[in-house]
Image 1 (tube, rainbow over the protein chains, first blue to last red):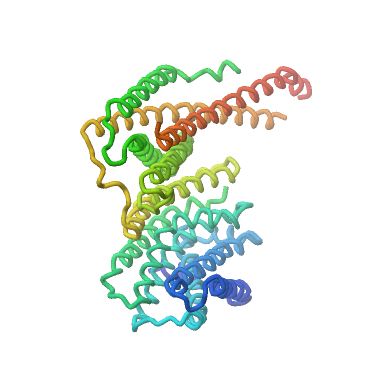
Image 2 (tube, helix red, strand yellow):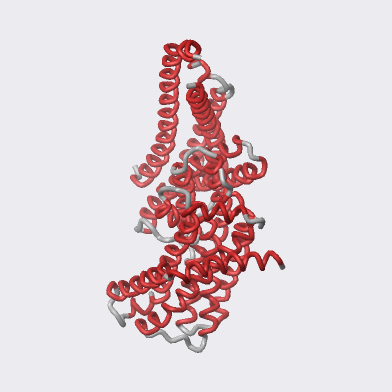
Length: 226
Length: 228
Length: 52
């Protein structure tokens, strides 16, 4: 119980810092918006190709924007040795991971909810009455992506090449999440029966569980000060 | 001190002879003993070393995984070195898979790349371990570097089966299932795998020796710097 | 002569021999650096002792 309270506290601290400036949030949001816009120009709007690749465009926008915000998550801590202070608090390393994970997850979810109307309007999306499931898929993908993303972001923060290293480390490992996310959202947007893409939901759930557990345990090795 | 560079190489000449003999035997099996495949013809003879390389890539990455876990657990330098050297060799052999695959595909199906599940999984795996080597190369030698790369290797290896399943569901395979398999082909494949495994052991052995010398040199440099 | 087969085995050989060449280069470089260090040490070993 205390672990959860402590985790929530760290997450709350991060979100409050973010809310004070909103700078990071707004730029990320704008970036996601631009990605969607650029894809609209790249494809002929209304064409079959554009309609079929709608989920892919959505996920490219979400994950690229998500990666940008993950990169920022620990950079802020690096200023004035905030991370050191955080590490000196009497909590387990895993709790810091949980807190960071929750903050990043919430950040990305809010960003996505804000960008979703734009997406729906631009691409004339219809959810076939499965909007809740659609949101559930987004949540499942984000949990997996943020779980490994938080770990890797903590790793690259002390590196000079962090802007390049984060995608280099993150995207190969995130391949299953991307495939599953695109496949499941395609199923929803085409109005297919859930049983057709239930496999992908299971895969996402499995990925989330495995990597949340693993990252929780190995996080202590990536934040040790030495 | 230069003579010391030749130290600890005991066993390598013997292993080299064994590897060379095994490779010659494998080549004999592949090119003369194994029959010509009826549908694909001579090109199918790429298959033996293609599969042997794929097996070796997996074996090498498994060693990286185990070495990384042992390093985080026990904290001994040698486990990290084994992981790093094995990762490098694994990338070399996965590169063989990724280059011979398209050559074979081109001659059989007329296209270089088919996004076939196994080939695609090998590609993703290759990218992950190149990222592992890039991560190692971009960090200065420190405990941090060893821990980071161990963590990444563990996450990456756990991801491999998930990648494999997701890609298999994503694309139905184009891998030859209609290939005629003779017992002789199986024999040739087994010998090729054994030969490559021995080659892997030799390469790992030599690579570790090189690494050990490198570490010694760095150690001497540090000592000199401290004394000044 | 099947060119694809030839290309396939050339690539396999090339990569393995290339890696062995890479290792050989590393060994040579290490030897060289070791020698330089040895020479330096031979020339300067007395210095720290005389100053301290």
